[in-house]
Length: 181
Length: 105
Image 1 (cartoon, helix red, strand yellow):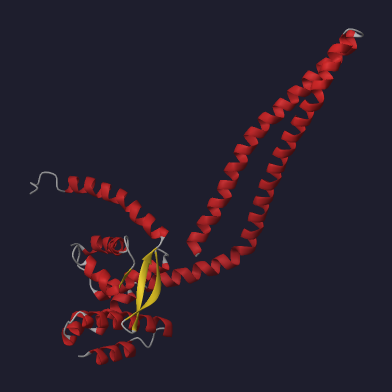
Image 2 (image 1 turned 135 degrees about the vertical axis):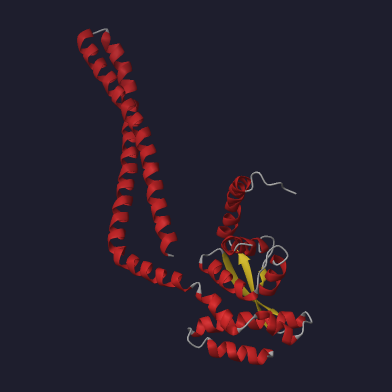
C-alpha cells in the first residue's frame, strides 16, 4: 500500500467520527508519514510499519469511555451551578464581613487607646482634687483599655480563621474546576 | 514489559520527551523508542489524553511547505513529571521486595 491508499482507507474508516476528530487523525498520520519520507525511508515500509488501519482504529477506541464521563459531569455542573453560585456568594460575603469586623475591632481599639491615654493623664491630675471620683474614672479607663486589648486579641484569632476560610473556599473552587474543566 | 506497567510509563515518557524543548510526533517517537517500545498508533491516544488533561498544549508551525503540529509541555505537565519521582522511590522499594532473594547482576 502506498501513502495515498493508506490515507484514503484511513479517511473511509474514520467517517463515523466527528469531522474534527477525523481530520486530527489524518493530519497526525500524514505528518508522520511525511517526516519518515523526509528521512528517506521507503514508502511501502513506512506504511507497513504503521500497522493495519483496523489496529489503529482499535487503539483509539480505548479512550472513548472518558468522553462520556465528561459530558455527564458538565451536565451535573450546569444543574448544580445555581446552588453552587449561591453557596460561594454566601461564603465570600461571610468572609468579607469577617474582615470588616476585624477592621472595625482594630479601629475601635485604636480609637479607645487614643482617647483614653490623655484622659488617663487628666485623671491623674484630677486625683489631687476629688480622689474617689478620679479613682472611679480611672477604673473605667483601665477597663476600656482592657477591652481594647481583648478586641485586638480577638482580631488576631479572627484573622487566622478568616485566612483558613479563604483557603477553604479557594481550594474547593479550584477542585471543582479541575474535576469538570 | 508488562502491558499494564507500560501504559503508565508511556505517558510520562512522552512528557519527558517534551521536557527540554517542544517536539512533534515523529521526533517524540524517535526519542522515546530508545528507552521503551512505542508505535505511532500508541502515541496518538497518549497525546490526545495529555492535551485534554491540559498537560501539554499544541501549536502548528510551517516546515518544508507543510504544517507540522508541535507539542509543548505545560506547567501542569511539568508538575506531573516532578511528582512521578515519588512513584519512582516507591517502585524501587516494591521491586526490592519482589526480587528479594534473587541475585541481581
